[in-house]
Amino acid sequence: MNVPSSTPASTSRTTQSRRTSSTPASLSVPEPPSTPPITITHSEYQNYGTFNDTTFAQNDTNSLMPGMSGASNSTFDQLSTTSFNDLNLHSFDQGMTYPYSPASMYSGSSSSMVDPLLDPSFNLFGQSSDMLSFQEAQPSMNTYSGLGQSPMYNDLVMHYFNVTSKLQFVFCGSQLSEITYNTIMQEPRGAVSYAIYALADLHLTQMRISQGLEAPQSGQASTAHYMYQEALFKLKSNRDNGNGWSESDAIAALHLVSYSHLSGGSADWQEPFDILCAWLLQSNLSLAAENSRTILQSMPVASQLLVKLIMWLDIFSSLSFMRPPKFLNLWKSLLDDRNGALSSLDMASLTGCSDDTLLAVAEISALAQWKATQVRNNTLSYPELIKRGMKIQESILKYKAGEIDRDFGTLDGLQEGEAPSTIHRDACVSMFRESASLYLHTILSNSTPEISSSVDEIVRKLGKLQPSNLDRALVFPICLAGCMTNDSNKRDYLKGRLQGLNETYGNLLQTRLLMEALWQRRDVSGESVDIREIMRDQQLMVLLL
Image (tube, rainbow, N blue to C red; front, side, top):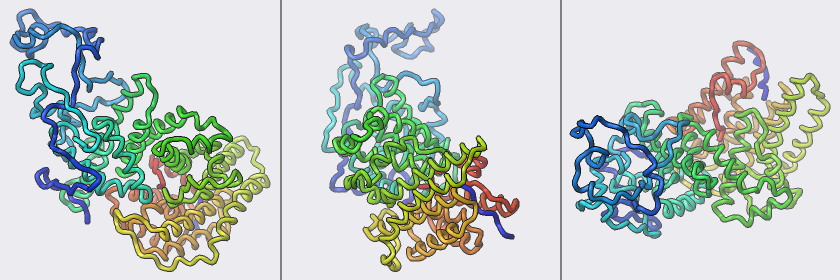
């Protein structure tokens, strides 16, 4: 995308003793179980005995732990020699950092947040001398027992559902919260649980930093990042088991993408996004062709939501990756109203961006890639470029025509955690549609009156919305309009909409830095600048969501 050349309530993280949250009616947290949520049996783990013991000096028995080969321990010596394993031991992945490292455990802001298996206070074997004598804790589907005996984890669960879940996605927080809750009820120690622990701890830390109660630290050294790595580790372990990606794996991966987004890019979002794409490929929906709509509607509710959010991420990440969406043909079959309207899709209620605009953005990204390929090969035909572009423009104008007489007036702002109203959604739909038109004209020409007109219209529409948390859902229109204007007043206004929000969480700071880097290069060189080149040069793989 080329830019025209220039003309010269917060939630504070308290100590553990103060972290009490009111439990919502739909979510109850019981007392932790008296026995650990671990099952150790002889019959389930037949391969443990195949691991060789480390050889020690013959007389060096005093330095060995009880139960190790060569050590003296009467109780352990009485145990059966049948091999066993621990439910929480996974095959080691050489491609990632092992999450149970001391540095990752104690360098974060929550020093007490350790895995119960590593916490000295976690009494693995109770009072009995027999390691296998305890009774397995039975999970209840009506309560969430947390992880181990530490109330820290339950506090994080409460904070996630009460606060963080409402900030992840401005429009679809409640729908995602429901499928997340159902998943952690079924897998209380799975990847989804660790993913929401990471999100909740991240938000608490960011709130403390914004209030000056805690010094900023490297994202890689935080407790939240440890939780992120643990969730990713569990996902890789599930993959290595050879069972493919499950629905719960995809839900966890979606949360990890969200973690990267809310952390301002301190964690990788491409790897969990690849997991989401692999899950979608595994479903064979992308190969269904004309039957894709029927298959989508027959999928479970959680899977349908995942498909829709993957669509959203795939289409808008195409700008960052400088490529067409990975599943362009699938998205066309689902979004194109020439195949008939698919009322169950309703992307506007999930993202604030309508079906027709999502399709337009996807096709514009594909057009940008086609143009780049033709330019590289010295075969670009401008009449063909304009012809393809005008076909997309006709679709955009058809839907914009229905907005001519619609005056939204001046809307009240949206408070943090508040659900958007229908009129908020409609205003966002209108702004995204104008942004699609702006995006298209940046591909068709370096400088056109349509570009200036679209920037002016986006600024006018923003002026009817009070600065509020709703701006978090409008990062794409704000950033695109800011990048495409040379007017210093408009630049300051659009940058101010981002600065008016709390930049300690989310990708607002990275988006603003992207805009400023583009302005600086264009003002110095006086030449047109491609926003995607700035992303690459500045290593800002920003999701403009």
